Image 1: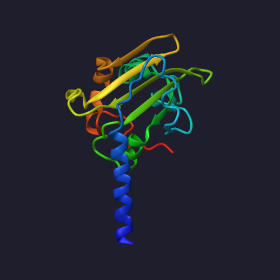
Image 2: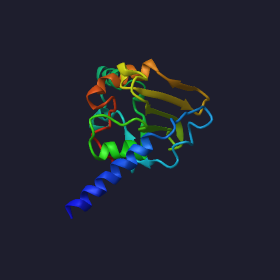
Image 3: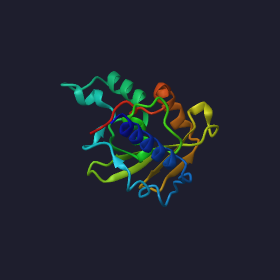
Image 4: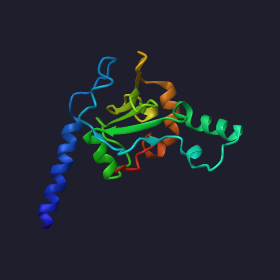
Length: 176
């Protein structure tokens, strides 16, 4: 029984290593809304990124609203779904300190009608890609036609506050 558990662990780790060694993913304006179709959706219901206002029983003061906007940046009052490829999902399940190369986490920003208004995400690149920012590559595209990818400073600056969890805010939450 002990050997069987060991073999299973080795097999899982080997598969994760093979997945992370695959050819690097390139997200383009044309593929940003579709490339993650086979990823696991981590959220069963839309997840509100700025929960403080949602928890209040009364209207928040203007000062509180401004503080929350500063704290959550472009995500204020945005509902999202989160997705992860198999490599990132495995890292979250096993609560790894560092995501393996090839990990991809995708965030869909939802419009009021629950349609996808924008897609952003992060891809863990090989060591040395951007060591100061955890070797994460960021991208964002919206239905208006905007597309940005690469070492996006605004993304890196925000995710710097999650350095303890390898720059991933939801790393210790496994949505079910």
